[in-house]
Image 1 (tube, rainbow, N blue to C red):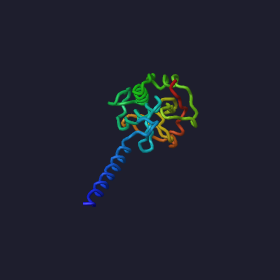
Image 2 (spheres, helix red, strand yellow):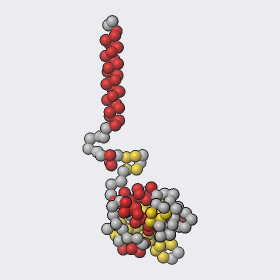
Image 3 (cartoon, helix red, strand yellow):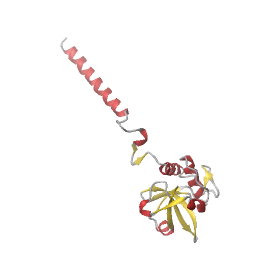
Image 4 (cartoon, one colour):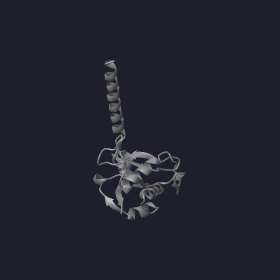
Amino acid sequence: MIAQPAFVIRVFAFAITVLGLLSACSSTPSGTHDRDRQVGTVTAPRSAGEQAAAVALDQVGVPYRYGGSTPTGFDCSGLVQYSYSRAGKKLPRTTGQLWSATAAVGRNDLRAGDVLFFNVEGKMSHVGLYLGGQRFVHAPSSGRTVSVASLTSPYYNAAFIRAGRPR
């Protein structure tokens, strides 16, 4: 009979411990919010640029379509305009208009969502959105899909003109 109360106390203590651990796993630490949590190594977006970069990244695999600006198909500037519109910021449609609507940013000062401008076939005619880590997302060309590329690749490193941050 003496062993029975001790057993009940141990089971009760174990149950309290398990419940405490489970509730700790589901709670938000004091002073933080869900948007501040990290998933892997990617922090949840906060700025319009970070949100736009995340939206663009979600479009990876969507086919290129000249003049396209929806998830059924994108061209490069359509992807930028769509991504920023989903982040709550209105941007113009063409690469030239995007150039005018952004403030120049040095290559060493890039932030997620900065618009990257490239010289293709002798003229400024391609844009992408910077992701961080020298990577960007873009709608490259006919027959391809929205994809992630590296600014350090020989082609894009040579074609890079400047970056711009939407005003």
